[in-house]
Image (tube, rainbow, N blue to C red; front, side, top):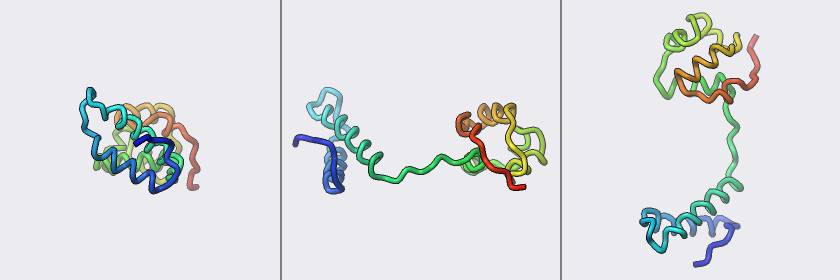
Length: 123
């Protein structure tokens, strides 16, 4: 089959089905280049047709990472310098400072670009 830009759901589903069949072919297989092309076409279709989700603000990202790592407020307090600071940050009463952002990035691996975004406080 000659593949072109995927224009509709039917073509997208056909590409997914075909890629599923040839996904694990070895690099020296005649189907390897087809698999590479299908992966690109599928990615483009998904990027063009699926709703994009906005990146979370710094506090939501922090809460998500804490949940993912099963961390408690006590764990965050050790990173940001105290229980009250951790509580104020999570409750949007205090902004993250640059030293806090650095520690959170190195301790939890949250991208600095996410942590430095502006967000509103609940005052």
